[in-house]
Length: 233
Image 1 (cartoon, helix red, strand yellow):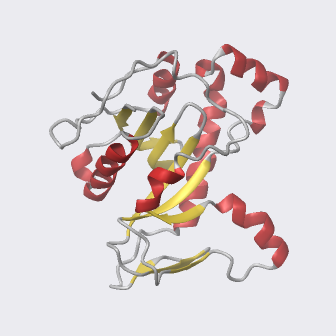
Image 2: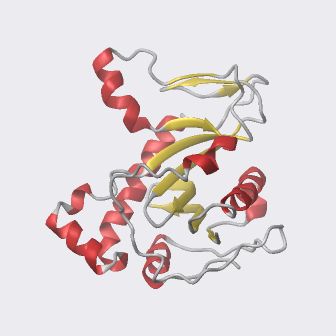
């Protein structure tokens, strides 16, 4: 099915993200759903690599370039590859949680601007402050997660802390797993049933020449969701 794509920054500024996104678009193209991808954009206090929307799900992606090498890391501190390259200045778990909180806050703030009528009603019946809690979070090692990688998010936690925290922290996966994990039918509810009636089907063409930039702000993300903008062709 078609993939709809918006860039917040030039693809050439992020070669690994560009390569990953190009592969992801190709993988999604064979799926049964439409996918709506916002890439390399900023919301308040957070720079987000990918946010992926389907008709019923939202996925938040923090991408790290593993180069296919062993990665060692944990809940705190920096993550490092076996060639001694450090994967970013900050801890990836802290990054994805900060991105999640900022992105969720943005969606909650503007939800009445883009949700369909039935979803607005559902939000008002429940608590608006509890919406979008089920955004799924992935720390994704590109192009893969080496089998010898030692990423232990539970080190130093007691049993209670592990049970309470680990499900909230998100999953660490290889990029080769991402497309299938974004086709998860196990969601208990549909947080965003708005796209099929609002967005025309458009196909993303592969290749650097076709993947042009389309800069956008936080407010423009809301406008895109509300108006059913078609994204890149």
